[in-house]
Amino acid sequence: SEMLSMLDGFSGYNQVEVSAADQHKTTFTTPWGTFSYKRMPFGLINVGATFQREMDLAFGSLKGKCIVVYLDDLT
Image (cartoon, rainbow, N blue to C red; front, side):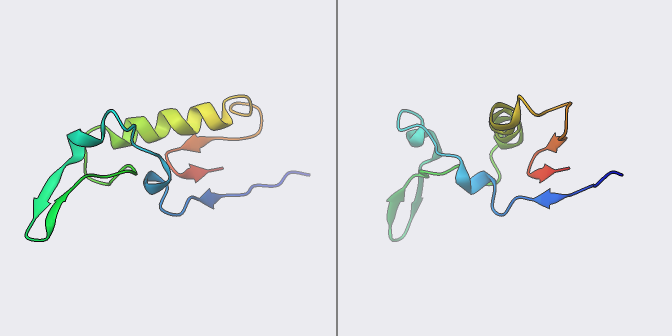
């Protein structure tokens, strides 16, 4: 017998830290001050590829054996 499970990560991008050396690249200014992200925000060009790389590192030894990883979806 076989079993299939599917998981969808919650706010996956927001779980990835932005390096302190790169936080200045996410700086934005509002009427209330200037801010930068400490966690990976949605909307940047490479967030999908960066998040996929993090997931590949986290589940690398299981990929192809018992898990398929596509962004924040685990099957």
